[in-house]
Length: 393
Ligand SMILES: [Zn+2]
Image (tube, rainbow, N blue to C red):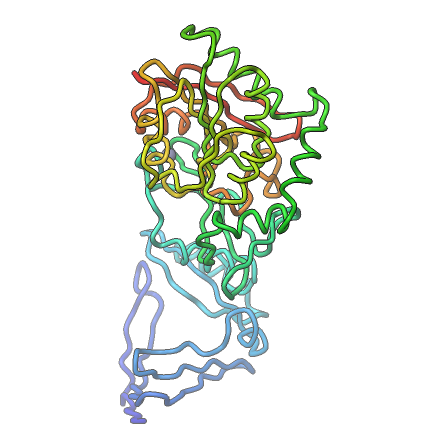
């Protein structure tokens, strides 16, 4: 450590009219890992020189408070930002100083919630652009633990921290976090969602639902009605359901006389579709599988919100579609669900995207489709859903 006193101290004026006189008294040169401690009126503050720079030592939400200080983020009139350390019993004086110097308190940096929020923000440096192209997002919900009812996916290490952000242009929402949960739609998703042998019993439970209690009955009705409105073949219409899961939807379509095919990345879901529902089933990644037929309809029931690039996945449907075929898409409705708060299932972690009416339209257009009909509904299961029909332009 080298201490170089300035004798006599260098005095200079700051502030609007130079009325505040500061005295520069000394320079201290530190080698890496050397600490200096500043003391005043029973408070103290220590700074360590590191090989990378300086380490402001006391933790903002713990030790700094024990030293009688709290940190404030201050915004000046010209949008410059400062960190100031305030003696806990001098907050009034601090506020007066801010007023007199034209500065504003942006945030106290001692509350865990504020700090967690900033930490969450820091993890989001590499935000993707919204479907609409905007990069301007506003925070909607912040999670420091999983909301009740969220599927307990296993994550590799670390604390649960997640944000739902809303595009300030189109209202589309994205869920962002730094936890690793890749590959969950192989075996992991079925395991986590239904348990290891739960598909059959989950299926039985759902098919026993009364028609008025069943999301799938409404879905089957909507698709059949649209097909009738659109015209085309009346008999032997065929449909491919992408991400067939429990296959309750195709069970209904099959009963209605449609020729059905299921596709699911999980081999157990495909086997279940084949064995229990009795439809053609392919276990494959939709983005990689070679097109195996042309269909009058391709459906994505609550599927596209689970993938990072829904435009690419939806665009792929064109290779499976008859010339005058249509695509049926269901997506979680962010605009309606937002009023229900952060606990709504539409915002659960497995959804990368939660849609607005505008972003539904943008998704369709970017995937090369024309949006023919769009409906906003609350389903019997209480889900807020956007339901749309797309066709080739
Ligand atoms: Zn947007």
